[in-house]
Image 1 (cartoon, rainbow, N blue to C red):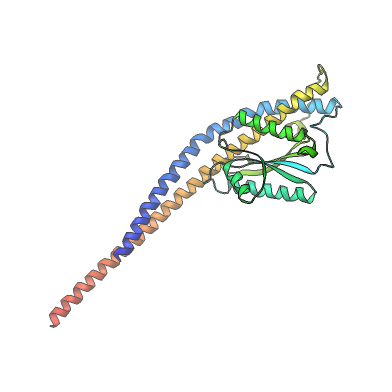
Image 2: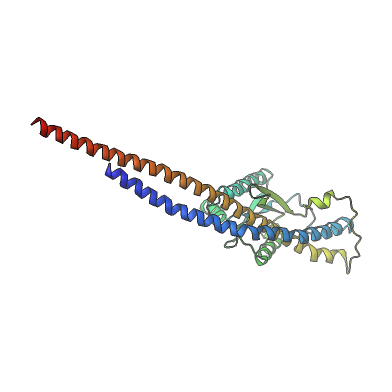
Length: 297
């Protein structure tokens, strides 16, 4: 019985230590989620403005640009997967990876090879462990992405898209990320970025007429300048959405883990008390039995 008490007491101490870690990670995620949500909101106006500008030029100029032209014979497609650098975020990374695998399977059925670009150590480890070749990887900024990271990722993807396929180029660009809806709901999304698709719902649904632009020096050069900025802004927006989703998922997972640790501590405390009571009962029984034996003799 004494051995059982020691086991339960050790488990209580270990669970209490884990509870402190879970609680600390929950508080850290909670302190960062506010800033992450602010960054998502702050990036919105610029993304909408550049989307309207690109939409107007692509729609009314009549120019066939490399970033807007469909390539039905393309055999390779780039897939950018936005995962997490750290774990303890529930099913956050697993959901993104599941969507990425579905996308690669669909591309394979269509006769296209998926070329992987990955953000986040967890996602990099997933594909590396399975022997999947990565065309590009970035780690260390999944929960606080910078504009420099978005610029580097977008430049690599644009270079691959503009490069001929016989030189390792791709004909499509897809992004798999997690959209931040609210603190409770984060939804994995697959977005085809290139060839250009206008993805802002406000642009498609608005009844306002698009502004009239005069292109100087030419629509081609305007698109050359606007489209890379558009791609970078969309990638940054996806990175920010993914960062907010990761922090929200981690806060929720750590809150649940803290509650579970408290339940375990209560259960182990009850079992330890039961073992102690059983030990006391056994000792009393032994004393009474010894006293009876002495009285009988």
